[in-house]
Image 1 (cartoon, rainbow, N blue to C red):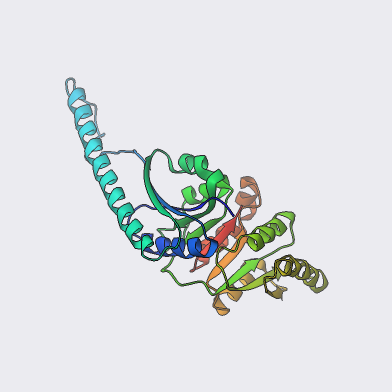
Image 2: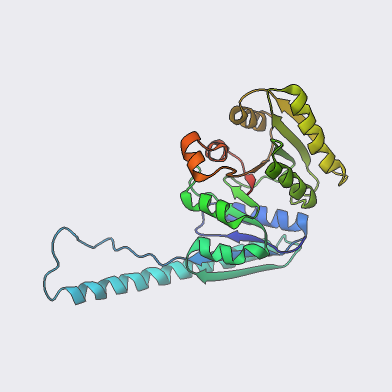
Length: 280
């Protein structure tokens, strides 16, 4: 396995947890760990009054004021980003067995991540608004566009001991199993493959095929078949089985189909209370 584990960080919320998951995966997969802080420059003045016309002669003063505000805000953002990176680098190096590096870059988040995608083995993102269990559109866009495994961290770090892999028998899902079997991001953990199918014969066949993929790599796995609705079955098994991470494919349908029929990925993301590893 080549490449590195990439952890984009912004703000204190969940950054410690992202760091701890990054160190754990880096040590398990024997990959370098890199933290980046992406500085976006989108300034909007809080003191700008647009209720009326700008008087003659006031335009230059307004532009100067906006320029000064943007400069102050940018300096503050850059400073806090560097301080966060230094803090996480120190924290990571205390437990990391691989190389740890940090970088601060400027520009759009998605564009910068797309430039790095060919070197990324795993992307780890902290989901900052988990109190409402909603996923921002920027995170969804990253998952759709980067096309690399993405671990979404939405809670404090718990060392993974049990992971659940959702499998539906599709070509994409089978590819995911191959990737998971070839890339042991979480080291020696219990693995359970879950399939939802109302046809028990077909479901057992799918599980047998999935299990064989791991057995060929000498990786033991358990399998479970459910004959109910996919959304509820996956979440219920995940919660009652005390799993630590859910592994599944992401956004396998077009945006139009997601709009018309809803997305299993979005439903799981908005309701799960532990980290989820997504493959696109």
